[in-house]
Length: 322
Image (cartoon, rainbow, N blue to C red; front, side):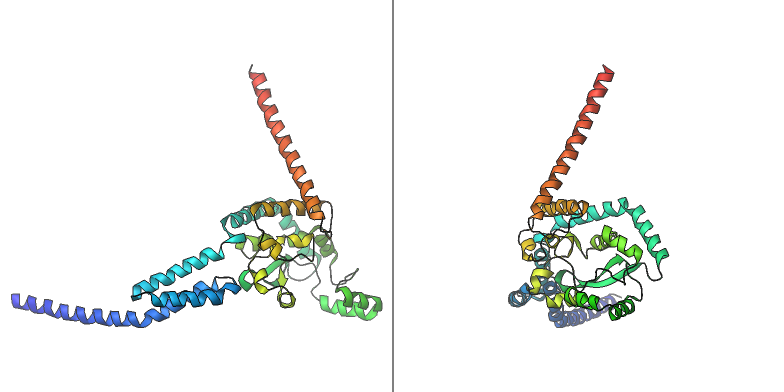
């Protein structure tokens, strides 16, 4: 009996050694492929301008590390480093937290308005309620920007017919690509555009991370190809609902990306709110500082009134108790 047990243990030992050898050989065979995939994933997370340099450096560094497991660990370290680099600057945790907090509160507060507009758009003209347009986002990834539909479903035909019967409108369209009277826009759509209510669904894009509250102007695929600035200056940022471009259409995107701070976002939001309330198109560069000062003054006045109300209530309670 003992001999049988020893024989079985011996056979198990042999099988274990063979199996371990096969596993080791298999692990050694697919380690380079695994490391390459991890480094490739890390490089994809980086801004476009950094990818080539970091790809070469990381591959060289990982190849110098001895041992297969150590190589995998080093590659994972590169992935973590890429994540930290990608989330630095204007896309760290503070900005994302501000985006999530504002988008969530705005969607909850504006939910009645949202559903009202939804029903009005659905009842006013045939066609889908939402309009989807492909825009270029952070790191060059495309996403579907959502807006309430403000045009007829046969908008292109309406435009052709209108231009064919209005020679003056042809010149206006060729020069500005805009029309004083746009036959494509529905009656409700015109009102929504004036009040910017057609952009309410963009809050969903902010919530899911396609856009930010503040950032460079979102570009279509065609507009992205025509821009004169380096691609990385744009793709380093999530496009914003508001930004410097509302106050100076010739502003460079680097003015935002290189000078970002939470306070800059607050200044732009205050200025944009004042511009919307005053129906200011924001075409003058100095309007930004002027609107910011007005917005800051309004906030300070509101806080002062709230503070006075709270203090008055406390004094009244004390007086009443006495």
